[in-house]
Amino acid sequence: MMHHKFFRASTIGALALTLFTAGAAFAASTSANNMRDQADSSKNAYLSMQSRDDTVLLLVDHQVGLLTGVRDMNVAELKHNVVALAKAAQVLGVPVIVTATMPDGMWGPTMPELSAALPGVQVISRTAINAWDDPKVQAAIRKTGRKQILIAGVSLEVCATLPALSAKAAGYDTRVVLDASGTFNDAKRTVGLQRLAGAGVPITDYASAAVEMLRDNADPKAHDVYGALDIPFATLVWQLNNAFTKK
Image 1 (tube, rainbow, N blue to C red):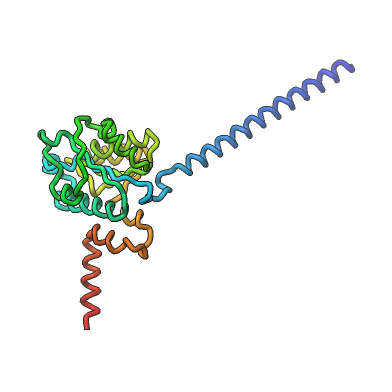
Image 2: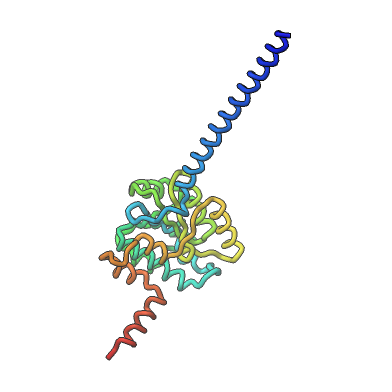
């Protein structure tokens, strides 16, 4: 009788120990998962602001030959947005890197308006389709010491998307400027946007990216930034204001 009581007590004790151990392991696992989720959340690119002090602008293949094929937006608008973004970046002290695929070949040189807006900025010529695969492009980015890369390119799904994905995989915070990029049909635009979304790469527009880095309209550089952006509706607002305030 005593033997059976002892056996039952030992069995209950062992079961309790097993449950306690399992509970402790579950609690530890849950805690680790929560900590990992919090860490992942802190790295969410959608929650972090673009910083002028940590951003480098990468402009990929805004070449005259490629621009002739753009069909998802007005080419004149695309050219305006790229140049405006480059000018605003310069005002804010953001380094600008320009690269082109074999500019002496079939795709032609970088569009003249962009070259004129960036005097002294040398275009990095390459053969690699993905700009991130070119050692000279990577070296130029790393030389800045910055971790946020703002990217625009023609075409969106290749020239902007591929380096954005590769740089993100390498630990950079990458964003793609949609209205400073362009592509050749709606299917390609959809492909690029879906792939970026799947990788967690935020999409922005040229004016939003600049004012996000500006941060404060009281900043002494604000006037020059807005002037560089040349936002059409802002010009209309200014014109209306002048019209109604005339005496």
